[in-house]
Length: 66
Image (cartoon, rainbow, N blue to C red; front, side, top):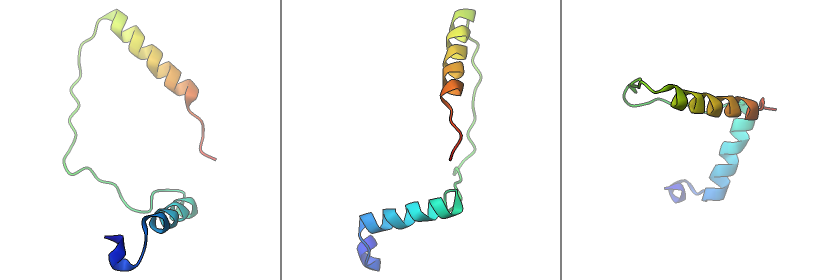
């Protein structure tokens, strides 16, 4: 595929990553082909506490982008 435009994979990735840094975002739109439907589930109190603990851990690990 890249050969058709005279580019190897490492060059293509390098160009992509430079563009990400320049724009500070992914340089193209991302869209889901179909709507995603999330079904809620009833869980018991013990399971909910465990899930809340996971969320709490994730939030502590979050770091702002440089």
